[in-house]
Amino acid sequence: MECEKKYMTSEELKGHNKEGDLWISIQGKVYNVSDWVKEHPGGDVPILNLAGQDVTDAFIAYHPGTAWSHLDRFFTGYYLSDFKVSEVSRDYRKLASEFSKMGLFDTKGHVTSYTLAAVAFMFLIVLYGVLKCTSVWAHLGSGMLLGLLWMQSAYVGHDSGHYVVMTTNGYNKFAQLLSGNCLTGISIAWWKWTHNAHHIACNSLDHDPDLQHMPVFAVSSRFFNSLTSHFYGRKLEFDFFARFLICYQHFTFYPVMCVARVNLYLQTILLLFSKRKVQDRALNLMGILVFWTWFPLLVSCLPNWPERVMFVLSSFAVCSIQHIQFCLNHFAANVYVGPPNGNDWFEKQTSGTLDISCSSWMDWFFGGLQFQLEHHLFPRLPRCQLRKISPLVIDLCKKHNLPYRSLSFWEANQWTIRTLRTAALQARDLSNPAPKNLLWDAVNTHG
Image (cartoon, rainbow, N blue to C red):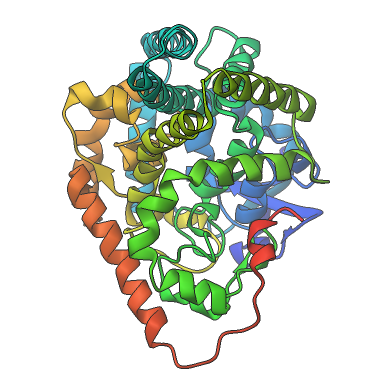
């Protein structure tokens, strides 16, 4: 005799959203992932942010079809009695299923091979320019080329973090460590930690770390209330120093972007030496050690300090184009306060992203991430497929009256500066005194 099904309501499910008591629903079936959260390849943050609700759309977005077979061991025996699927989610899941049947998730082309080959070639040119050439112009060009190398290498690290770009998982991990830690000096562990949180809570002011740049930048006046970052676990204090910097952020944006890598290096070190559980900590540390061996040695081979400073700054300046691009994709989009909601996955992604329009021959330069909405909706989709699916995403947005914003690189910069300027002027108009200076807290985000 078949066992009688047990049911619980969505309201009851919401009560299971605390650490040690983490339940989720997928397709109306309720799962207990309290223990699994420690082993989850994507880290604990996505589960902590979405626990206590239905997460079907997020699960589909981030997991291959093979992941469904692993769910049974977490099944609680409960079903949601009030499980419903919105029309938007229904169409989104249908589209994901069609892409899967077409083999788009598995058709990766040769993008990674070509990119790694280009990175290796650029690295050889940089070495030749520094070690064999005496011209200051050759050294300047080498620094600029190194910045372009870092951009392309970061795209490989990004792709390999979302899906398997190599023939095996082992080779994929090697590609992550090589393209991230060894070549750029930025830990893939740090990237996964922050990037997965960003995708899940896209443009949530208190849950998305990619918008939490206090005291240097604030994209919304709601930061002036000293929001609590649920990602970093501390208050983002809006003090006197933060107010001063934010009042001029539309002027300082580009200069700060030129040296933004320094902060990424710092965040990498803080995470790897923190008490937080870090997957493959030893491998990440070894990769960072490789970078901090070859990069200072290369810089030291230049004949004098002015050229060394020029080399480093030129490499940072060129690579800042990538940092700016990531800001353009989100800074001027809609924001909200609060945790992500699994029931409006598609809507939140369309609301919080901007695409950058460009010709197909420029896809290599932007790493496919100019199709930011397409990437956020289907993060496992290889970048060579994003342009192909873009018209289908546009049609779906039109059908449900959702925004699809695609701007030129120039227009996206204008929107971003306008957003920063608006917040800056609002900061200047505040009449209440700012709280005490907590600058160190803003830097030491990992404790």
